[in-house]
Length: 228
Image 1 (cartoon, rainbow, N blue to C red):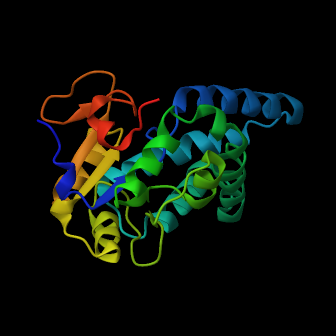
Image 2 (cartoon, rainbow, N blue to C red):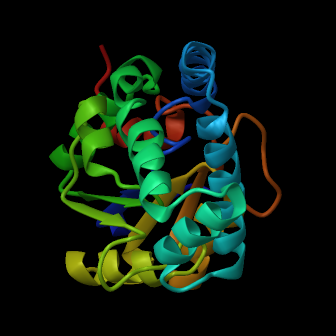
């Protein structure tokens, strides 16, 4: 079904996998981690990151409250590291080092779409399970509202709706006037439905029960894209 953009006042984007291509980023980061491992003869970074991601995914499934504390403590226990050491590894390899690669991995058409949304009077929001401000800057994008799952008063990962509900309330709009654009129906799609918002899922193939699109120059976004 077509989307009634006239009744949409807030467009919320997920970040990872939605604003940039994850596969080329993962290839670049895997190369960097391998080089670090060989030069330092240290497998600890690999072990910590692998366990951190698995635990994070599980805590999202469990909708664990205060997930960051549990995530760090459980990763530390599972890898025989101190919590401080886990935080340092995550800060370096998950939050800082990927930033230099993000611009090259950004999906085509996003700056034009963001500009078109603003011209049309739509507010732009960001809802991310990871810190997003530095990533947005690296991507050359900006938003009116940014909510990270670890923010004070949130503390829970998608698909729990608390983060999206907070963003909607801050923007001063109604849930039905909100569209969440993401890449995972099981996270972004579900959180939108639970908050009473609409969902758009970026996918190269149709997903039964969900409104999908393949590219940000899709006809779905034509009201906001200026023809050359």
